[in-house]
Amino acid sequence: MSPPGHPAGAEPVDIAGVGIHPFGRFEDRTITDLGVYAVRQALDDAALGRSDLQATFCGTAYGGVASGHKVLGRLAMTGMPIVDVEAGCASGAAALMLGAGSVRSGQYDSVLVLGIEKMPKGIIRSSFFDGWQETAGLSATPAYFALRAQRLMADSGITDHDLASVVVKNRRNGTANPDAMFRSEVTAEAVLSSRMVCPPLHLLMLCSPNEGAAAVVLRRRDSTAGAIRLRAATLVSHLPGSVLSESTPMSGLCDDSIPAPTARAARFAYEEAGVGPADLDVVECQDTDAARELMSCEELGLCAAGEGAGLVRDGITAMGGRIPVNPSGGLLSKGEPLGASALGQVVELVRQLRGDAGGRQVVGARVGLAHTIGRGANASVVIVGR
Image (cartoon, rainbow, N blue to C red):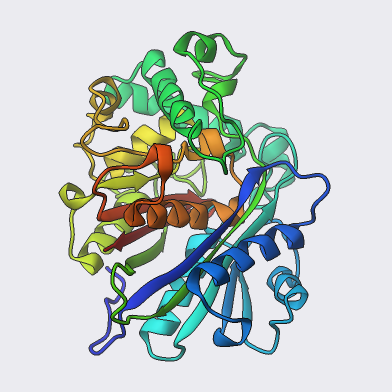
């Protein structure tokens, strides 16, 4: 079973403008403040006025009721449809998919897609799980992340040092990203000597929940030179049956023949965009923990199943490698405000394709992929191109 493709006569969609509030901790700013900052940036970048937009789609997991309305109300931009969307870490990508569909169908000419979040401090909590599951340690973080990492190590020959190398790479990339929470390099020794949270994951192998916002303006395709096209925006949920699924981390029946949500989302996105893994120049993918990045690379088809270790050992995903992954520093450098996470990746890809990424620029980037997967499981893959 596959989701429907673009209908005949569907309108191509451009990314007209992007904006981002840095990710981190901002005790003096509300979630609405963060969103207003990102939206103003995106409108300025798109050279559009507040009256030029016809709808808004806002992704947030912890923002509460009418989060998008609060941001748009502050900007005197109400009156249009304002839809709040929740899909865990993929909330922003879900909002992007809805916004793109509304433009592609011809319903609107220009829409705003917004992601905002202020995460509680500490390990990510989720109302997806019953209280007894959290009490028993059966919730997603960190127990599930650790089980997933253990299995990846068994299947792909990945070592503790490989996991540390992912952190070293991403933290090095993050030093060139002014929007990242952590902008200092770390050594593999520092990673492996940091506190063990849940074997094999040390503290520095886990991303930090935090705060931030990102915004994207979409419009119907025009003839503007150098415009960035949104070539695919897919979102799928999990298929039942895997004991290590994102939805039920330690229950259910194990069936390894069931494809992972990320693999399915990637397949649909590649088909929609008319590209394959070999066509990608830059990737921003989920690295809630160091093992998740390597698993994501395998599921996205950047390497064959079981060959993720070679990506980091051979420098393939490093800056200057064949396919740089997370030049922004990833979540390990930026931290993760759930609703803004996926759109933050899209902002990075647009900057890369425009040649505006500064010290983290991937030379000659023309096609980029963003990937998130959140509670549910909701896996998203977004592909952009010039």
